[in-house]
Image (cartoon, rainbow, N blue to C red):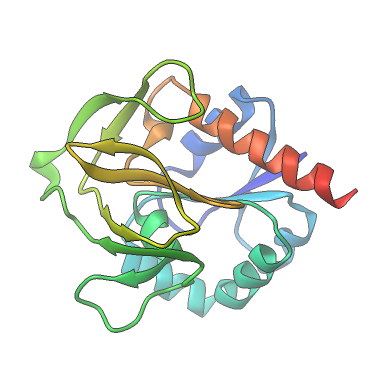
Length: 194
């Protein structure tokens, strides 16, 4: 089972390490044609507008939409969550528009307001260590979206079928259980196709 990490921006090496710790083969994705050999894809953090622009420039918008249409799981972290969202507060256009949610960019403030906390995440036994850096928030979700965790009554982890989105950076800790959760999603999706 091979899972890619979109390598346009963000903590690509850290996501690869976390995925490998969770038992997957992980590769950095720099070309659209690499998607054909993958069963899942992580869209890491960074700056969502920059990631969106680079995705458009290198043909990833259509390719990832097609990847998702095949039921292959996607995992968006921090800016990756914004890229997956159907609506972005204060913006007329979104990026992939795959996940039925409205998000707010930099909802937790600037870099100096970054923090770490332990989050209870549905489907994971013990609390998960979460690193919030200029983190976005999920303001609203559609009826098909399951809220997996909240922080101070705000949604920070959500799932819609084969799509998983988190406001924080699970790859910046030694806790790889969220990546293991995603690996299980990929296994389930792959088993359903056989």
